[in-house]
Length: 532
Image (cartoon, rainbow, N blue to C red):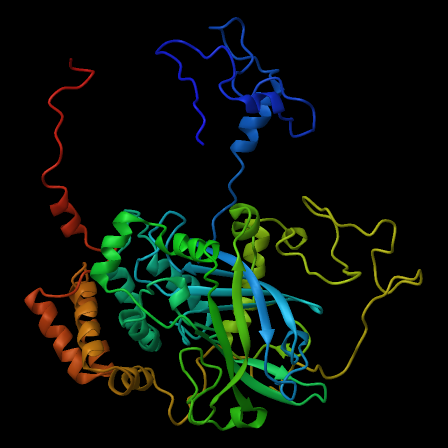
């Protein structure tokens, strides 16, 4: 039953606390009893606030600092806790503890948009982040992927430039389609991902109704040291469903947190979302001669050549108790790996292996891994990382150096590493060596012609046209027509015809002229307090 809270009359203060909870009291951040959480210390009822009102000063100082910098990428998102159960036997490929038959591992998932800021709508057209943290018996394992199996660029050097092109102009601070297409068309390797983005998976209906992918190629190795290259596929057991641009536009105006709310409410109702994990497994030696570069994150591996092998099931069944502590402070990084899993020569993966952990050190602090949501759940951790701001864990008076002769263990293995690969050559700055089937457009074209049906192709053409009509012009527009004709000549021709005729589908978050029209008949006040 709702409580009745006394309301003060205009110009009159509430002399007594309005609810019985005042009898419970509160404490300062140092643990002492607080006198009042509602009234500052002043000289008389109407006088100035006193600087030695320590509780007021501490409250305001902490309030000024209670937000950490938002993620530069994937800022808007949410997530939930759950489990991953390995139901199949893949021990012939990996010795990783969580992927052994019958093992159930606690985990955390975070879903997000890529370019949008914290307050941006969930339903803008954008890839979705699909980040997973597994609390394994060998340490944490983070898998940072997306809801698409490919990405826009293949070298991390381009990554900051790509992200900036998707965000806001330096002068106006506005998002800009022309800037996006300028980058995409000058980097045609983006075509495969942009095709996904403009297709019917470009705006998921909910996070529960999208697949997740590791995107990169990773190395798995077993107890015998045998190596395979693998790709992760998480298929939604709820099915894959998307929104049209018109639906997304409407939802963005009605509930900017639509996806966040949906996940929380589904779990609260006991409708626990599930995903089936399968992997594609490529024999180690195949990578040297395969017809496309298996380490190029703009490409997929043929399912005919490397069919999916089922691994297990991910289930999300527990909402966070505190969003900031357990989601905003959750830190995911591809560098967080465990025995049985390794990196690959994928340039995007290798660059992210540094960048993601470093951004967490900037965003949260150098001891972010000591926070409960990020802390590994292993017995007797023994790390040679010490001190720094907000250090909580410590090792007393144990040696802080290695080697030492005072009983503290350290590692000193030498020789070839289990998770490595062979490489040689000059130090160069250049793109990957091309394989026989390596080009920027054929896989995107195959998606359009061989995977989609006529209705999907028509919706795609309308979507691209609408996006181009959102401010793309001049040479950038002409390059965009050529870009799509290289993907598929027929679709490219139709896109150009629609744009030149001024016709296209809605473009969520990028229709400034339509927004101005909506505001053309405002509510006009006939009288104001100032003029009355």
